[in-house]
Length: 226
Image (cartoon, rainbow, N blue to C red; front, side):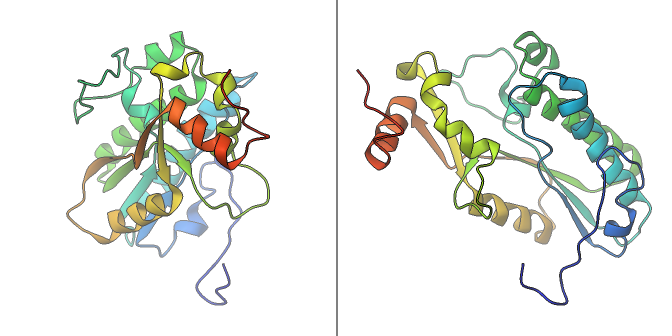
């Protein structure tokens, strides 16, 4: 913020086609950042899936209208990569052959992960069919300094780590600094040779170690293990 000439704000609706036309007009790079993050929803279709899938498609439809657009960068999530039923054991390498399975997400009722998986599939299909230069960024859980006074979903999840993880001894916490994620977006647009999708994981921390660090920093919020 703080720019007097270079920053323009536009009102748009993820669900409304054409809503992004004014924002995209004249742009060379378009960044579609994270869709709504909800780890529980009473109506997954309306609250998560529609905003994610229709949102990226409406952005891409606006991009097709303007020849100035050179590249679109989509913020996806590691959940669109690793939820395929395969266990992440120490000997497993996550590579370019990995894609999340919508049926696995549905069976686990991981609706946010499903929304990111469906949005990714829809984005690539539309981009390939309409000649859009698309690159996707798949970060793990994003943490770091906040711009707003309230907690966002990714950071709020840290507060619930102990309650949400049934076995902390065999779990890992995958995290990425928000500043690294921002840098990756900029580099993805500025470096012409970047293509396809990129996974961003800054740290893989054993859950027990993560909880120990949190206890040392915030002992009242994270009591020690009994």
